[in-house]
Image 1 (cartoon, rainbow, N blue to C red):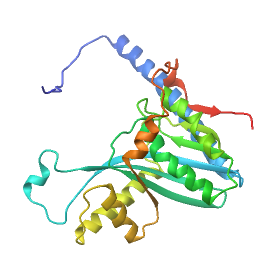
Image 2: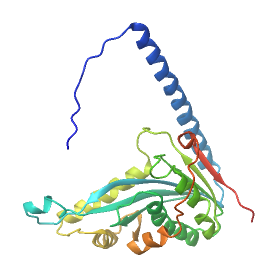
Image 3: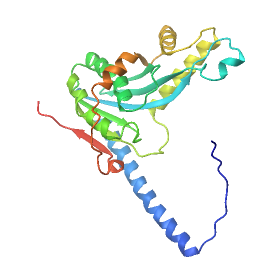
Image 4: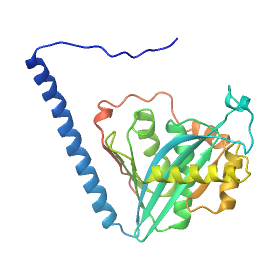
Length: 257
């Protein structure tokens, strides 16, 4: 089965065109208002960070296609070319910035995958900055990943295991690239450079070992299938859908201490 997209001409009245244009402009103005307010709020948050605050800006990078230093043609066919999932991010502290990337052979990008990637990052942040209490997540808002009922539930439970109070901001769609995208580019460029110098990157373990030896700036985490399976147990299967999910731009979780 294949899908073909073709260009077709449509005719209509000028009045209908004006009405359609006005509707799209209303959506555009709301979109611009939201993103400008979000950028301004995050900028002010970064300027007012205290020693108890930490911003975690995250995103999934496009999967990395594994490579050999020397390949034959059949490597490019079928399932011979494995992929590595990259979850990238930047931690913003009061007087410090730390980039990171977690690597995994498991290609799940849903809520279970998100928290399998995030839990080692939270533990690392707690160990490195033990005074942290308030954690602010920033990400885009796809409903199959960050902005969905399963992630809402996990955000309200898992971070408290490390002693964090949490807030998650979902950015508007289609607003260009952020800092995590740059981390993904650094990781992939470093991996390609290692392959050109004789290394073989065939899975997440070999990629982790190769990049660790190179001593790149982003802190690396290796996520195993066992961590995904452990995370799967914490995700309930009977959650009710949250009405107006697409209109949610921020989730704040409070709990008595």
